[in-house]
Image 1 (tube, rainbow over the protein chains, first blue to last red):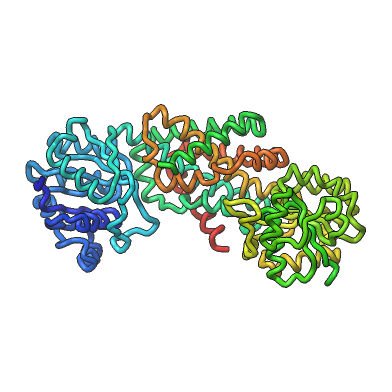
Image 2: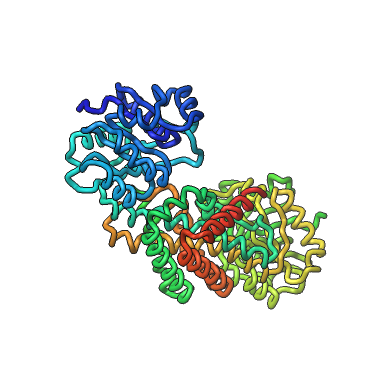
Length: 284
Length: 284
């Protein structure tokens, strides 16, 4: 249980920095190295998030556990280089929001069992290492997506998942494909619904000549996600396009039925089922 | 400026009770009567929301200002009876969430200028007189929908709108038709989008075999409205059906375009415009 002595955080921002702080708080006794821009590394050192800043090559060569916390497209670019420099018997994991493309790419470059995809269902509106928080993963689901089920039996994978539990996360194991399909429903569709709602209200408000002060608290709730940066979503769409299209098709289909039968007994059922899901995800 | 000496609140729940408390706090010196169920009136008296509980007939006969705060279908039922018992030179107003049907019905029963439709853009998740709050209208838009523009010049209407300003509301004047069209976009469509999202996630989660713990904060935000009671929405749909259908058509159309061009340059524009609306409604 002591194979992980040096952890390298590649991208010491909100997620990577929080993972480092959470490890420390949970009693991790080893060294934590950081890879990132000069500015980020300086701040991370100042804030006590990492012990030293290193290059990607050095971080990959020295880490027993490598934690890739950049956005998806950056992770995809880094995987071949990381794989070239790691020592045998180490584990590389990531925190990207989609998993199929990342795991497939990693499988082409890493030895079997040396890479484990991950996705912490945690975040904040603010970004950067300044927002890093040792409690970020507490009580939150942390999905890991092994390429093969048996990867979960690897000693380093077991050690990593024990640390996930120590930092308060709730572990959930899925295949990369299942992960991407599930989050297209529980996360990506919500983003599309919010963005499209904001756009349609914007386009139609001009024609009704109305004041934005008619927006009630419901529309505020429903457009919070619409403020998300497209930079992040561009990568998610690029790597989970088909599942998001399928989720949008199901949503459009249901909205069309709701529209066609609006006010009938079917509408009552849609409201009941919608409320049921809302309560289910709040009761866990 | 002292024509309103007795106010009758018909339906002393969250909205009616809050209006009474807000009037008192703003220095209203007259009497406040309440009409409602025995239980509600007992609680309203206990909480100091009203001075006395009366029948609808007595409340209509004694009030200088009648404030109808029940749900829409109840208001529609009460309008003829209220109109039969009011004294000449009084004003009746309501707080229903749609306005065209209510104002049209009132026009058939009340003398010209004796009724003014209203819609406070304020609410709370909890209901009932126990949740009544003197600050509920503070800083919130309060739409009034005169049947004719010149109704706004009536002395009692002017006195009522001065009280609205005194309780901290931001007055907005619209025709009943414009109101219903605007709120179909800024309120009703958001409800439909949330309800449909909840339903589609519920229906498809079974097929992905997934755990509800994969729901992130985004889905929680996006399904808060889905917990709304259909009782309330049934009335809104019944009295604003066509505008809601039009809003749904525009939303479905946009989602279809977003789906068909997902990941292209058009997607970036949809994200930018969605974010723009989200910021606009937060900056007022």
